[in-house]
Image 1 (cartoon, helix red, strand yellow):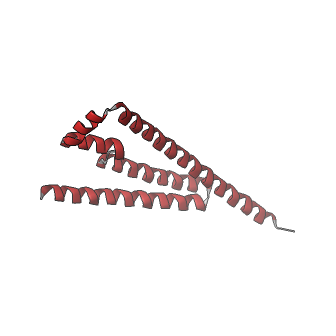
Image 2: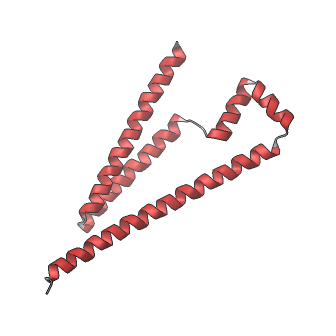
Image 3: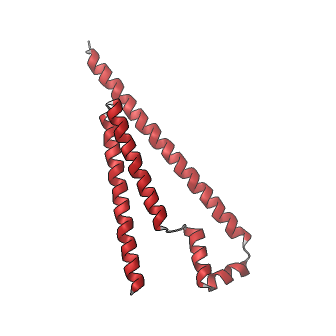
Amino acid sequence: MIPDYRIDNLIAVATSILFLVLTGGGLLFVIRRRMKEQHELRRALIEKLSAEELIRLAESEGGRGWLRDVLVGVRDRHAAVERALQVIFAGVACGIASGYLHQKPLGAAGMILVAAGLGQLVATLIFNRRDKASDEK
């Protein structure tokens, strides 16, 4: 006969894993939906432009920048910092939920999210400083 506390631990672990999988799946669904919407918007913008308009845009510096932003996406420091802060706050929320629910895997996920957010924030600041230095030269 299996002791009751082992079954309780198994239920708690299975619930934690299921929660993490469902949360990750929901996050991936939202990200994929946003990426698809952005792709459709970019495609619609490009389809509306004639070949002559595209050539005129490609000939000017502002037009090339606009096309780059439409096709690749805006490389904005503010947006990158905002995304990093969102990841950090999600990690802190996981940590708070972990303390409330007494679930160590949720706390570990929170620590990973905070570390990833801090890494992205530091990388954004370093690249921004490097870009400013290269612009000054």
